[in-house]
Amino acid sequence: MEEKNSFIVISVEYVTGASLNPKKVWRGDMQLVKTSIGTFIDTLPFENYGKELPGYDWRQHIGGLPVTNFYISKSEADYPWVKKKNISTNKDFSHLPNTKNQIESHQQKSEEEILKLISGGESSSLELKMSAVFGPGDTESVSRNKGKFQIVKAIAGFSNSKPGGTLIIGVDDNLSITGLDKDFKEKQESRDKWEQYIVNLIGSKFKSDFQPQWINQYFIDISDKTIFVIDILPNNKPRYLDNKFYVRVGNVTQLLEGESIFNYIRERFPKY
Image (tube, helix red, strand yellow):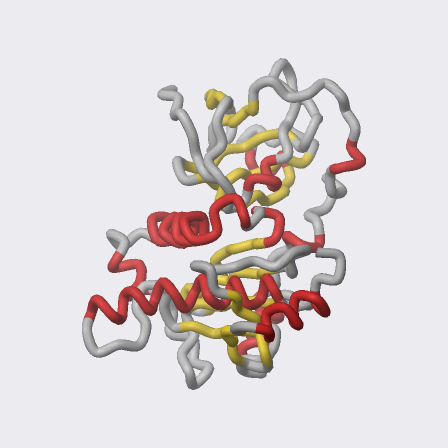
């Protein structure tokens, strides 16, 4: 199998081994690792299966910088193995989440939870956008620029707010689920390419200043429509977007300037 030099981790899901193996002989849980170059499997962190290397905690790279120093090999499942090279032999689990259950910060909301959020409309912890490609504007160029900006601005605002928040893409101003078909069409009719567009957008704007453990993103299919959910956890220090400071105030993302930034940071991040 051809080996790639790097990839970006998009999402990590814990699934039963039996669900991945046609022969139903795998009894332990596995990681299903979705990346920019494909979907792979791995054992849980530090756990072994046969002669394979121990599992690696891929969740720490979700939405982050490209991962290197790994190899891919065939498996009996529908997906190939992905293994991280040179894993430390020190099995100190104190820095890892509970590997038997997905950590709370990276749990996906259910369809019922999402519908309840949408029905309540935008709030201090919820932003709704119809598109991540197109925004308001009289020309296509303006519309595209605003489409990108409205996504990263919402992420910055929730990141700096005390409770964090959720951004849902594929819902219009009337709280109707419109889906992402138009967005997908702009990305070669591919939801994978569209998701990679989101990952690259976030990475290019926040770079290493925005750590992957503070964000969780996933698709949800509701009836015949697909929406995209981004859960943003609050940061432990202020985050700027293009040297500007945004916060969530009520149901809007607000730009702070001058002394207002200092006062907000002093109260929100007292240890900073």
